[in-house]
Amino acid sequence: MRDLKEDIMETSLDLFDRYGFHGVSVNQIVEASNTSKGGFYHHFQSKDELLFVIHDTFITYVLKEAQAANVVHSSPVEKIQAIIRSFVHVFDLYKPHISVFYQESMYLKSPYNQQIKEKRDVFKDLVFSVIEEGQRSGHFRKELPLEITGMAILGMVNWIYKWYKQDGTYTIDQIADVFTDLVLHFLLPVREDVEVKGEMLHVPFFYECK
Amino acid sequence: MRDLKEDIMETSLDLFDRYGFHGVSVNQIVEASNTSKGGFYHHFQSKDELLFVIHDTFITYVLKEAQAANVVHSSPVEKIQAIIRSFVHVFDLYKPHISVFYQESMYLKSPYNQQIKEKRDVFKDLVFSVIEEGQRSGHFRKELPLEITGMAILGMVNWIYKWYKQDGTYTIDQIADVFTDLVLHFLLPVREDVEVKGEMLHVPFFYECK
DNA sequence: GACATAAGACCGACTGGTTGGTCTGTCTTA
DNA sequence: TAAGACAGACCAACCAGTCGGTCTTATGTC
Image 1: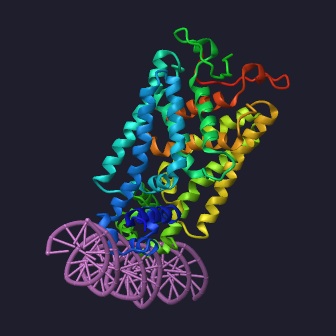
Image 2: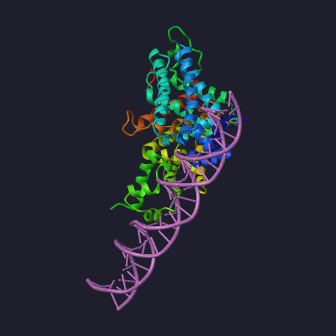
Image 3: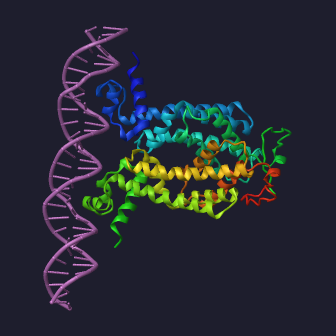
């Protein structure tokens, strides 16, 4: 027999993914997971807390991975590659969690919304700081506004939750590869500038300004 | 005296944007817009229909603009520029509508969800076909997978609704310019390949290369 | 211009159903 | 035997939607 708390998590994740947080009642959750109101409220203080736990699961993961990438690599090019790769992979691991998160995060009450916002901001700042580091060191195009470029990257990756299917045409690795290619194509400067501190980058870059 | 229906639309848009569709009751809407249950249901068949009308407003706009761009321009480069520009501008005109849409679209019942999906698909297919056209004609890099690249563009633009503020650091025009720059940087092949059928592209990149 | 009339605009008390959450109590297990 | 795991009847609050009624306004008639 499985742990009942995990059953509730899994079942509610499935239901939320299909019908949304507000489209599923606690009664439906306990019914589908073969438990009871008492069982549910023994494990969770409220329906909101269940939602928070769902969020925290994947946010903790993506943040840990990005922070590790930031420490392991020294070049901003390698950092952004590693961050995008792990960021994209999160959608393979936690897609239902993420779908629920973006559809429902606005309804979470204090103190849950506060905690979630903090973790998301740490991740965002990390991505931004890598871009900024690359711009300062000359790896990335200095003329790009940090905020717009950063949000473009977060946007194209976050949007994956809308269309990615595990049994789709492309694997999550292929998506990660293409996305990294796209991002590096608009981040890296013309070829002449890519040589930084005697280091020659072997990243395909195609466009030169006229 | 304003039209009451418009008052309801505007008030509910504001409330939905702050608290979400399910976070606002019809009672709250009629209270905030100084009308009544009767007044509300005189203008709208249901709460769902109100949501549908909100959606339809901006979807109709973005679709019309993109289709016009597709007809007016002949080069895929100009087409994608115009589409991105108008797509980005929709967030300036209809940001509350769009926020509500992405948070709530999942809860809409038939036949509303069907109609919305159709229009969104038409728009998506239009963007994809422009990219494909550019790849066939040699304007765009042939090695990029259409689906992943297309969803990357839709993702980075759609995500604007999460962070764009009208009184923020950058205007919507600046965002559109940077986004166009980013997209063309990863779409266009090396300069040698940009010359197509004797036509030399004069792609107006917003930011000057060094 | 005065009046009758009808149609649409709007009102708000009311309802039937649902929801998140509580509480008392039982069962299991260490 | 005590403590945590779980059960399920119960409740107060709330919600979308209804319905009989009133008010406003445009129009046709004399």
